[in-house]
Image 1 (cartoon, rainbow, N blue to C red):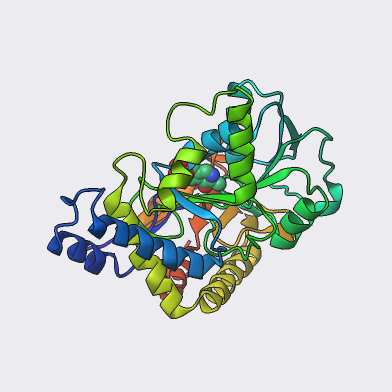
Image 2 (tube, protein in one colour):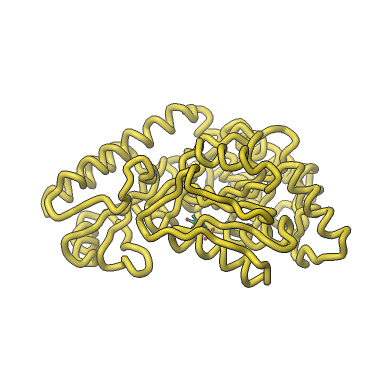
Length: 360
Ligand SMILES: *Cc1c(COP(=O)(O)O)cnc(C)c1O
């Protein structure tokens, strides 16, 4: 394609480099028309399930379930895992929305809130006594703050009676989360997996299943649309209760297979190197600064930078070179830019982007 644009946006994002080949295979095999109850579909689900388990080291007992989006999983997690109270670490728009879903579902949930640009470390967090579920956002996409895996694991270990949910929507598969420690995690595919939007992935352990069954047995509602026990039962047969996003599931399996082929360690290292390069560049560029105050809490995949002039001017100038970067989120729309550092944003592309910034 002539004048092809490169997207450094945090989702929807640059598509995975091999995407055209995978979509062509999907069409060639006429997979858009097969029954979602067919053996052929089950084999697609099983393949994607296998590749994701390998990539993220997900234990065999856990279920991998598919929804329409990640925000849908926020609601399902609250409905299926909480009777009275969840506890949320809130430091930006996405973690706040997760919290608000709990309040909208009339839970008496609590939050530990931090200002934009700040993050959470284990020893500052006190989990309320009655929290049934702790909700952490591993990568707060609005502000470019990560929560370190070790802090997440320690938080669960020292509060083992609460379930632990991790939003890894804009960072998966980069965080090295221990699925023997945390109870549930989720992501959607239009971020770091480089796919078109419309598929959410929900990983849960048996403790989650037990909790949802108990809530139901006690006479509470789990919601009408695909509760956890129903999704779980179907997933174990490589099925979905309704007609799922077959194309999304197929493409995700292909991308995960490719990532496994490259090797997750190689991908994680390359992501870190590219992030360091971007951060170093903007730390040294006059007028610009990194939004994250604590450098150990800087996101590896969503780079948020304070700008010396209105960000829309910068975005417009960079776009002339066919490179699309994002504005700040919410109140920081005009004073920040956000740059994705996803797997599909190659080292060469990052270099080319920095070269454009050199001209400013
Ligand atoms: C994008 C995003 C979501 C929402 O994902 P959808 O697939 O759009 O529902 C949730 N959490 C974080 C951290 C995100 O970046």
